[in-house]
Length: 368
Length: 189
Image (cartoon, rainbow over all chains, first blue to last red; front, top):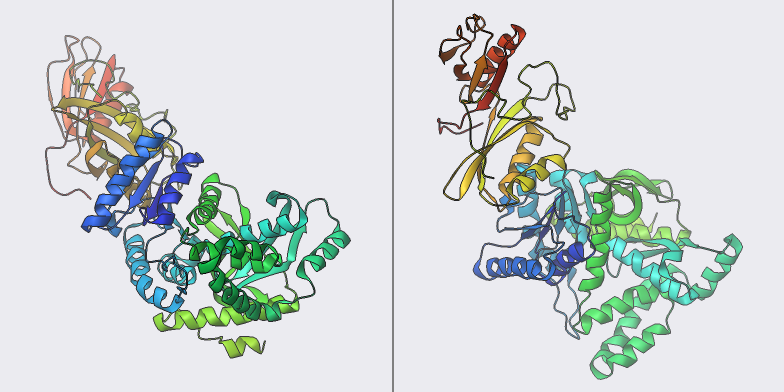
């Protein structure tokens, strides 16, 4: 099976291409399509990347193809890493609305081309931000079940790692999911946490210890306070900033550590690519596996008896044809409240493009 | 990819083509049981790996070739002709994927029953047998079969396949078929 990476020469796109080859996700008989723009700089860099990858991995590289037009995208799995990202500098905050305005046109151009030329079975993994907008645009053009956003899976892997660090175990021994919106409105689902080797009572005590008596009702304020402290430290003592994060509870670390990493200038390309390649590998593998991802819901799951519609990060079953079922049990009350608020914010963000459901708002959701 | 088209020999130069129509030795994936049959003319680079790259596109998607033949090389490229069964949607995916291969210069694909798809066959009947095409087969032929000499038959792929099946049923000593390079450059379907 073939994989196309839109925005292949960007920080994340390049990492995705590299990891797809290094992790041997693509056999030598498959084709990795590097997709860029036809303008001079992007075209040159895309051809250059192809040469670099062949140079590095000739022994086990797949066939590597360069495409410079949305109409030339041909693959079973399409990774959307194209578009603008927020500048990785101290003090620069990510204006997701502005990012959305810039990247909507990119999403739309590729979505229309895939709908026009595609096989009707491509699975699209959206990496670019706002991932919820990318999912909404692609899902409207290609069908809901063929499109999944990577953000919730990346947040989930980070959550599992932070929980694992707090418990002194390796990440693969921790289960659990992060839902909601990728970024400040993520929703760590503590109720889904499972730890290999701990029974239910031991797990409840461990989770209570890690949460330190907090609920998600105060999470937004904690995030704002954390960013304020880190914004000062990042320019004066970056090492102290990272050390400070280590003292915080796991769910706050899930957000704070990558935020600081981005502010540091290092970006989070390797982690983002790792989560993306996980999803690609799952699709290519042919097995149905439970992951978390941003998907366009149409009432497949509910919170407090209210069916959810619109784009939201949730645990789903992912397989070769895309996502199928949503595996979200009734969350704890504080999780449900935060999820509902987040759903309303996503809806409001999508509204300018006519992609919101129009049935939920922040106030509406808060009341639920 | 250095094979040459041999329309004069008495063996089946297309290899896997089932000229008798009695068995499907390739086991092509026909997911609906009614998938149409296609003929693709692929111009590919004359170098090692070209056929492998082409066949991988089909095999990894569960589509087998009904037949595959490599034509003569002109310059640095040669013609590969494949026939396969696939829905129209899968045909588009396969051909778009083949077109992305660096070793492929061009691809033309036609429905197998398209009159632009021509074929030639060489049939050899037992001594004394007089060649005659089955009723309704619009083909041209040359040669006298009665002394046991081979006869060259030309026509649309569908008609020539009917001829081959017909003479095999009559006890032909040998019958081979090859799909000819397209001469009509009209846009394919």
